[in-house]
Image 1 (cartoon, helix red, strand yellow):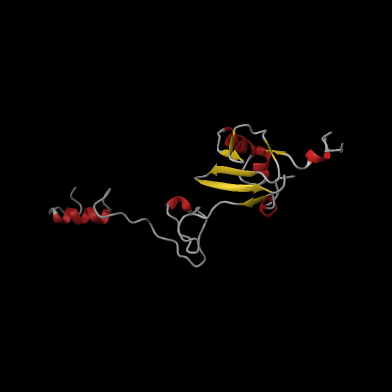
Image 2 (image 1 turned 90 degrees about the vertical axis):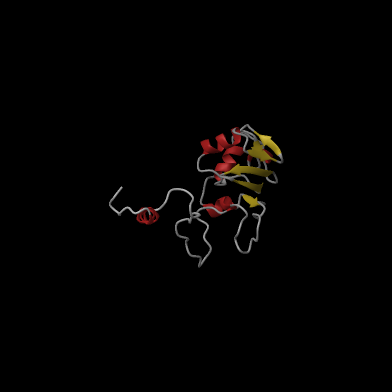
Length: 158
């Protein structure tokens, strides 16, 4: 027996609750969100759906997590000791998430949701407002004034 809460040495550092591990690995922002994620059935442990936040995870386990419109596949390398900075959290897992569809070198994906809002390629310009097809939706102020002129009305007639 070790001094770690009366647990045998083989179990004290190797097993951890899945909700705690998700929080330590910075998959979610709070432990209560980790519990909701697991309880909602959005986490699989070695291909089996997990609904109990107290389910233990061990090094070597593979977690499949559906979070924020994407699926993460993470291999557990170590249990967490604390919720530290991101570089420390990345040492807890190996990311096995497949690359998005499309050419990974160009950064293009098949769906518009494929990129996170903060992902910007170096040297890339930010796009302006989204363009709409002519004739679809509400006309712009300029288009409305042009239509008014064509109909014979002045700009201040309405």
